[in-house]
Image 1: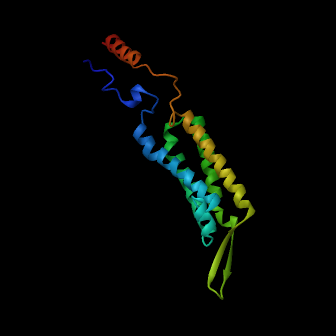
Image 2: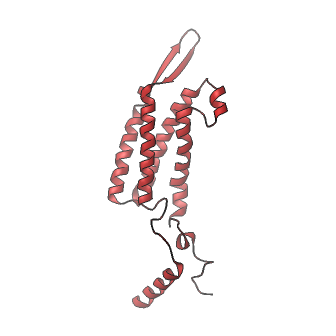
Image 3: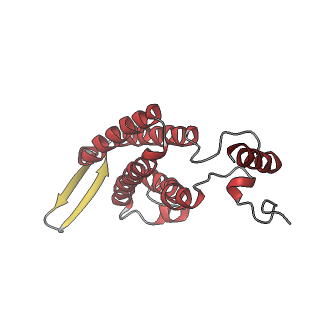
Length: 178
């Protein structure tokens, strides 16, 4: 049994996985997975229909908090993947990040708060602009995925990987270099 066989090739060497798989899973992919839930919460205020229909008390506040978290996670994804991308992709991520920060900094303008001092309650309502901004953030999320994929952080852009060719190349390089 030689050094290179299918038992000792990593997933990155033998398949369509990023060589920085662990980093990608922890610092990028886990955040991307959570953004889907935050996006749903930001739109509906709940992750399931039953809760949405029965819990009317805090849905608007949940939407707002989920929207803030969605934006923060997308900014973090940009930061965590910036170093691994080419300059043109970095520039696009920076543009998205700045737009996300702008939306985050102006979230208060997307809601109205009605205070009832007699009953000592406050009610948060999203404005019509809220849906427009949420749609834009969803679009940015899609574009971030495209940039990450171009940088091989989601799927490697290589069609196939042949471990035998890889092994031959390493041996050839070792022989030629001495």
